[in-house]
Length: 400
Image (cartoon, rainbow, N blue to C red; front, side, top):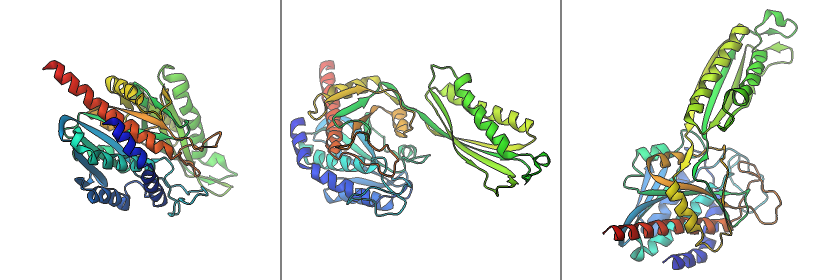
């Protein structure tokens, strides 16, 4: 069945590309993906696949029942875009000002739609059930995964597989990791409340910018001096705002940043340490502060048996030339929530565009992918799905 499935996917690669380009031209931001969700649902309805809409928000879930007994495998693709102006000079450039697919979610969606269509047409020889999870709002916490799970998208699911097109890695390479692969991603916001005044009379003020600058410097010492060096962690200030005239000392300053960790104890520790630094700096500077720490996605932790199964199944895909273990990534992904509920694995599919030495990174205004990677992603997910069914069918036969 796998070779037949591969052949059908080869024949439908152009359809994947057309879908991807249409979605690329019509991106929608997280939690606003009404038209994209409708497009996905209509695609399945048109070919007779049962579909549920508005799952946990804008989520869409389709279900393919094979004619043969077996397990239930879930495959997930996200479909939200980013608030970035598309600067590519291509015919499929975004038509929505200030919004673009700068992370490959359009490709994820196209891959899963056509794979779902192909599996549905082969359902007479398909074992078990395949659940196609099209998830909204991956880019912006609290994300769509948790609400979709709460709405039942994983009910009865035995295993889940997901992939991310990775534009900075060569075509034909897939990357995996057993255990933690992507970090927990948190957000914090700090407001320093001082007392402003004339820039020529700093002694009559409580300078929120100076205090904020001290805090930025001290925050860097959390990772370098207070966290065990064997525990990966990042503390980054991404925004420091205190807009005023050149000769005015600001009343207040706002700092916004992110924390990335893998160890839950380190995550707790850093949250507490940030506040200890705030207390000390604001006592010294006679200021007050507000501090909000928002927990985002937990770490993505792949399960060992399912990851090993994926490695084995990747060898069956001719277009995959390299299967390589990747180092832990400090980026976040709400696929983590699925893996907290069922076993599975999340992997990266190389999608570096042709004829470039260095690809534009994800979330860049000129980001693009090699569309041949859509086919590799589809075959990799298909191979993992069928290999999982085959393995468990053999296991059950042996037990009997």
